[in-house]
Length: 266
View 1 (cartoon, rainbow, N blue to C red):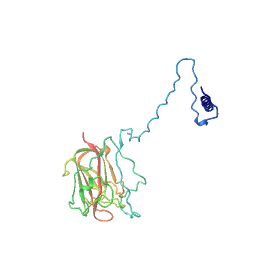
View 2 (cartoon, helix red, strand yellow; view 1 turned 90 degrees about the vertical axis):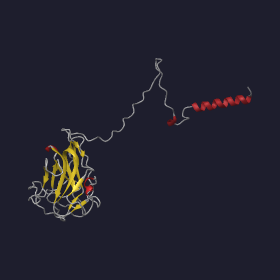
View 3 (spheres, rainbow, N blue to C red; view 1 turned 30 degrees about the vertical axis):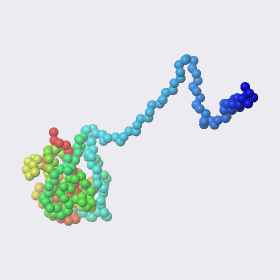
View 4 (cartoon, rainbow, N blue to C red; view 1 turned 180 degrees about the horizontal axis):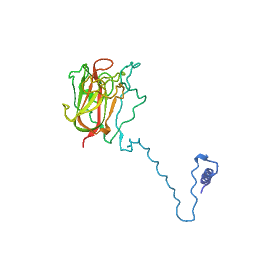
């Protein structure tokens, strides 16, 4: 070996030794120490912790003790403009003061009136189209409601089959706190309302509409609509009809939407 080669070997050895000297590397860069050898010949193994569970999705509505669940009802936005007018109406219910609690019904309950045929006593509305009443649009904006003529008018929805009905929710016009008069809601098995007719709501306090004196209270229109609870009344019907006779703002009759919550009769 030549002298030049000896020098190269010596320099290489010095370089290797300098790398192995303590303190030559930063602490954060030191590799993790190898596991201590054991007395047995079994190699040391490390265990990998189990993966973290995936985040849980939002819980589905749970049934109450009676097996009932909240119905799916997405309310429109409030539309009151300014201060509600002073409605001096007899037999007027007081505002609830808070949001209406969810309505509970058997699982599988849905709005069976959505998209169903609808007719009206006024076949040529002043504003809008009759089929607005079951189109699923509950807003009070222009283009969302139908305006029928004065005096008593009614609308009729054909569910196209007999259904178990648990609740009916309807909106006349909630852009202001109006009160509609002689509101009557009936159901029947035939379109002429002769067979199996039942009155589910009637706030006609003087029988001016000719459907009998009602015991239900007048109410102010809001974005929540009027909910009629018939869950425990065993209501089965194919046709739903709603009457009204003007309101505290004018003599006309309006409908935004009628939702019928139920299931096909078994």
